[in-house]
Amino acid sequence: MKKLFSMSSSIMIEDYSSIQLNGPYELLKLGPNSVVIKSGEYIIEAAGEDLIVNTLSDEVAVFTFTSITSLNMKLREQDGAFHDR
Image (cartoon, rainbow, N blue to C red; front, side, top):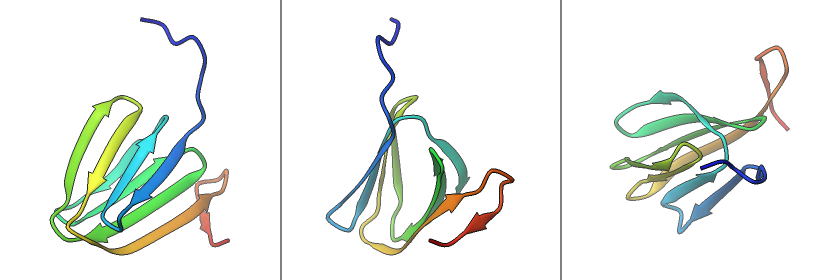
C-alpha cells in the first residue's frame, strides 16, 4: 500500500508515563529503563521505571514507563551536535 500523503511528526506525552511518536523516528539508544530517540529535528531522551516498547508500525511507536523520571528534548543541529533551546 502506498502513502497518499506524508504526515509531519508528532510527539505526545500522556499521563507522565508514556511517549507516543507518530511519523518517522529513529531509535538511537535503548536501555532497560531509558531510551534515546530521534524524531524530525529533535532528540528525545527519557528515563523511568519499567520501560515497555511497542512499535505499531515503521512510523508509530509507544514507549511506556510506570512513571517517567526524566525527560529531555533537544533540537539537533545539522552537524550532529546538540544545543539547548
